[in-house]
Amino acid sequence: MNQEVSFADNKFIISKTDKKGNITYGNELFVSLSGYNTKELIGKPHSILRHSDMPKIIFKKLWEELQAGREIFAYVKNKTKNGNYYWVIAFVTPSYDHKGNLLEYFSVRRKPDVTVIKNIIEPLYKELLSLENKGGVSASLTHLNSLLQKKGMTYEQFIFSL
Image (tube, rainbow, N blue to C red):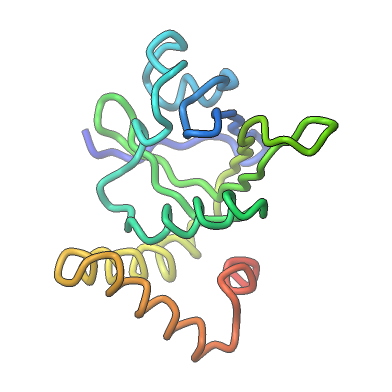
């Protein structure tokens, strides 16, 4: 339990959710890494995989971007059914029909650079989570915005710079 699970650098985790974030599809790698079977995943909120080390502000940012019709990249630590975890760099995008109506959300995830996770993302997320525990999501948002302002970057630019 609480062991990191790995997957090949050249593999992609793919899933789809409905507009509310309930899983409608997961490729074989998504299912196998999760530790759940397909029947246990389909129809469940994607948050079933949310690891407690993940700051809420990251998911708030993700949903704000998606609901505004924009795609987003984010580093995410997911938990498995048995309590293990795996890191991904996720690309999430809204999917529309030919009339421009939102159908679902589509996510493709790959294995992130271990150095980026250990040296940048884990310390940042630990700090954001600590702030959330003390002052709520608004405290972590203030800190994240301050960090981005000091770097002169948007969230997207920061993620792409890693």
